[in-house]
Image (tube, rainbow, N blue to C red; front, side, top):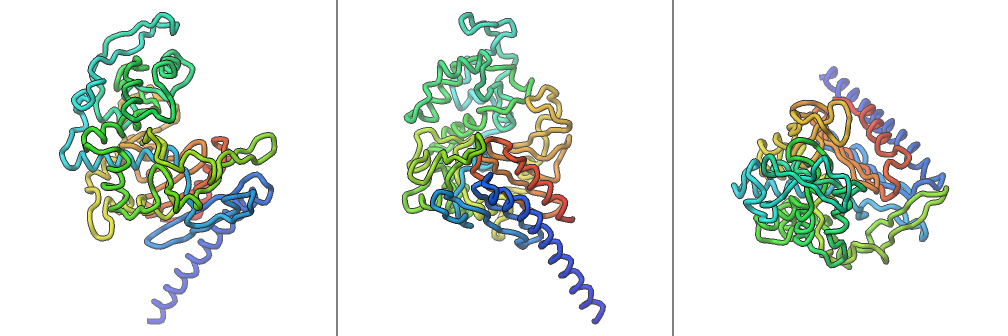
Length: 396
C-alpha cells in the first residue's frame, strides 16, 4: 500500500510543479506586456486530462475605466467562427441533407453560370473569362478550394468591391449573389486559398435548413452544447461583458471599439459564418472539448466519431498550389488539422485581427485557448509564444 501512496503523491507533486511552471511562464509573458502598456489584457485557458490546468484573466477588458479582465468576458472570435459554421453544416450532412461532393449549384442556383478569370486578363476594364473545368462542390466550400479569395487588389478582388454592395443592410443572400456575379480566381479544386468560402457555406446552411444561419446555429449547435454566450451579436443584458477592442500603434494602445460603440450590439443583416462570431472562453472550450471527445457531449454523441475523423483528415493533400506556403500545411473540414499529410493529432486555428487562438491536442488530451482583443495581427507574437509555452509545459 505504501508504494502506491508514494506514487500518487509523486504524481500529484509533478502535476502541481508543471501547473505552476506553466502559470509562471504565462504570467511573465502576458502580465509583462500588460504592465508595459503594450497589451490591454487577455484570457488564457488550458484544460488537460479532464481537468482545468489554467483559467486566468490578465490585465483589463476596459483600460480607460480600469476594469479588470473577467472570466466571463465576451470576445470577438473572427475566423474561429469558421469551425462553428462548419460544424453546423456537418449536422445537416449527418442528417443526409447533402453529400460532400455534390455540386453547390444543386442548392444555390447562382453557382450555375460561374466562370473563372482568364490568366490572360490584365485589366478590370477588359474582363476575360474561361469556362469551369468542373463544378464547385460542397467539399470545396468546407476546405477553401472553391475558387474564391478574400478580397485583395487583384482583378477579382477589385470586381468584388465593385459588384458586392457592402453595407450594414447587406444580407448573406445578397453577399452570395454578389460574389457569384464575379469570376472565380482559379479553377475549383486546383488551389487552396483562404477565402469567403465559409460565408458561402453559411448561406448553404440557410438554404438547406430553411432557417437564418444564426437561428439554425443556435438551435443545432449552441443550445445543445450549452454555449449560452456564443452567437453573432451581444444582447443588451450581456453587452457589459463585451471586451473592448484595441490597437497598438505609434507606441500607444488605442481603443477602437467599446461596449457603447461597436458592431455587435444588434443583430447584423449579414451573418458571417466566416468571421462574425462572439464567444467566451467557457463556451468555446466546451465546443473544443466536444471535439476532443470525438463528438461526445455529456454522455451523448453530438457529432459522430466518423464526422470528427473527417474534420481531422487533411482534405487538400493532392493540391500543391496553396495560399499559405508552409511545409506540411494541411486543411480539413473547416479548420487546420495540424501540419501533416493525413489524419492529424491536433486542431488549430486563430482569429484575425484580434489575435485569438485555440489548439485541441488529441495526444495530450488538452484544449488551450488564448483570447485577446488587440490588433495588429500577429502582435507581439503572442499567439505563437502562448502555443509554444503550452506545448513545452504539457506532456502526453
